[in-house]
Image (cartoon, rainbow over all chains, first blue to last red; front, side):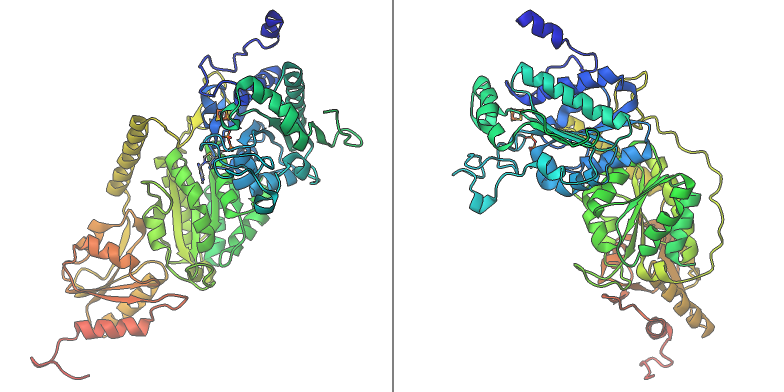
Length: 258
Length: 354
Ligand SMILES: Cc1ncc(C[n+]2csc(CCOP(=O)(O)OP(=O)(O)O)c2C)c(N)n1
Ligand code: SF4
């Protein structure tokens, strides 16, 4: 079992050999690896720019060896738009957390999606603000306790969690939107497929693509890594079902199985 | 053509490659002009969803090594402060035009100069400066746009053209010249895809204390160099002037007219206008005051330029201050009256009624 896994996930040279600073069991490291593998798959390393967010993955540039730009908190889709319009020949992606993308950067993501901006977005949804110490995120689940919802998120006070994939798929602009997770090997393989599809859309000039990745944050879910991985399935996926939410290439945009 | 149209001409002739902006009066002619002209030239134009996004798009295009600009007016420039701080910290060359209007808040759409402190003191968070250029006519809206792009590239810094609604909207003859032929500054740091090299990371984020401290020392070194090399100002009739008017933009025009009228009356008035508001032309101003007994500072704000004049002159000369806001401006008549009062010597020792 272990030997097989090693083969499937052999380290791509797009990843630097550095140890990441992520907590044990954090989804960010896995998502980095999938992104790096997709970069290698399409041979993008020397013709791309990634826009890093403000959030736990603000140091992603240390781990993925490609040209990278910073963006102010939430503005990654706008910075990516600037790069793409300046150099359409480059592959341009953003990597964003849920606070970054679905709170402070809501306007930027909605309008980039609606323009059908030919960029790819990796959206890491961990239902919490990791970097600032576990506060409530727009995607925090009802009842979830965080530093700023100590009694649990209440619909009456804070509203229900924002479902980004569903919301953005109401727009006509995007080409591909899918929600995946990285809680276990089978799902990791599906997540990689979705990322490959998303990147492919940009390479084919089809426009905006986004992959939402449900990602465990054991630290601020206050769970051991294994339990956090299980919680993605038993708890998070009840509010955020996996699937393809928009697929302009497929005739009816039919939803894939969770 | 209008000053706003001159900015469009100037930017296109200076080789702007990407423009991003959001509509706001009194600078809408610029965004409309860019929309009409850039796509046909194969250059990027996009109306953004906000000024926050516009400045971030400029951030991205500049990071990709292209000549990028945005334009706005006061409330929009306030929203851009976030991005400008990031751009300054990342050392990216961009050009920003602020066609100032009345504030605070939504204020009104009349010409004003209330954003002087915001422009010259940094404006966003952190210790940084942007070079601030102050045109006083449509021709300078064109000429200073050329210079803005060159200065931005040369020093890897944001450059702001601080204009106002009156200069932006007034129609004047403009000589449509081209910028002087200059070699473009190379941008080896730009994000172009990491071909045959490790990835570049362009950022303002430097978590280790010594790294950020060192980065700030580098920024400050650049600012000191800019302060040494780039201060600009125009002295007019100042060599023998006993009273010197000081103003920028619209107020410089009013002061120049007042100077001419007083000179026609045989009174020794002069005018000095800073062309760079940061770096403020301290030495040039002092050099323009060999005979000055008093200064008159005129601005469409309430003592912002005044502060820089006091700093430059170490408060050694008495200053009459004329400040208006909300779209009101000093008048030529008013400045002439002040000039007369200061310059006409009482005939007999005891002062004399006019
Ligand atoms: C303008 C601004 N406001 C607030 C912050 C502080 N801040 C940094 S990261 C962050 C939230 C990050 O959460 P998320 O996007 O979910 O990413 P995660 O850390 O969970 O991966 C906040 C609020 C900031 N850097 N800039
Ligand atoms: S705080 Fe959460 S999101 Fe951040 S590194 Fe730790 S586990 Fe990952």
